[in-house]
Length: 359
Figure 1 (spheres, rainbow, N blue to C red):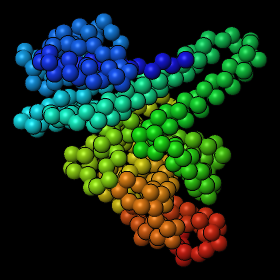
Figure 2 (figure 1 turned 90 degrees about the horizontal axis):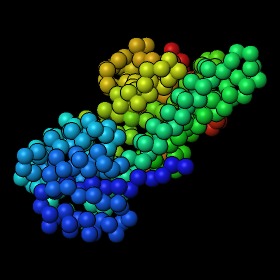
Figure 3 (figure 1 turned 45 degrees about the vertical axis):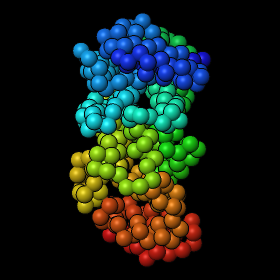
Figure 4 (figure 1 turned 60 degrees about the vertical axis):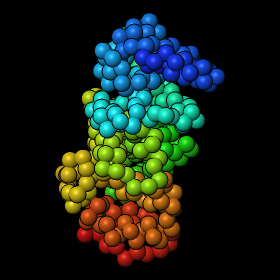
């Protein structure tokens, strides 16, 4: 049974501020530790299982950035939030980008906003730890499987079945953890799976190829685990900095999926599903067939679902508008051959003709 971490560390050299925060936040059910310096905060991290740290920026001897940098080295999963005044905001934001901190809180803070930020921070921390545990369990099961005696064929068969189920469940849970950041229902990933499978079958891929690509399609946005909620759920246009943070989810997703051959297709999808056929996409500016086939397929499925459903920055489009927009992007954003297959599938489902011909 996974036990949620609710332990918070407050680091501030002004005892009055720290005490005031502690008094108001303890009502939220947190176990709270306090430190008056970065050095003292590092000692607390050594002694206690802290999930989230709230640190002042301006402190003598060791400022908040230096403290959080050392804290991350001690505990890589730690979710770090910086408290900064208006005068030091620019430097604080620069440090957040450099150190990949979870976010910052401006003085004077709104208590309700601070409470909401901390709730999301603990949710983020616990999701990360839980999924790390699940992946560890899967790896341990795999290791045990390798150690079984070759003569115990029935045991091997049963353990293989259990391992497959564990891997499938881990993939689904990891995808749900990322999806929960901007889709509480988690329905998006299953729509993507169905759309991807339809395209794979329409392209005539083997059952094994179609199964792998569709299974791993649900991990296309797994890197969004690292994107702060204020960026992910922003309803208005993103700033250049926010665009950079958002786009980094492609490389982050590839990194999360490790280096094992089993996840090769998943890594291709996570990194390259925002590449465009004409080379205008990211992160690598790939074009044409240089874009991995699984990523080209998932890009179409993802765009269709995104256009068709409400987003923080737009409403849901009609099916006719979606298909027209995608047709206009053929050869620009999308592989024209794969898009033609997708349109044929949509025509059969709706009993309509779009006139798009395969090149």
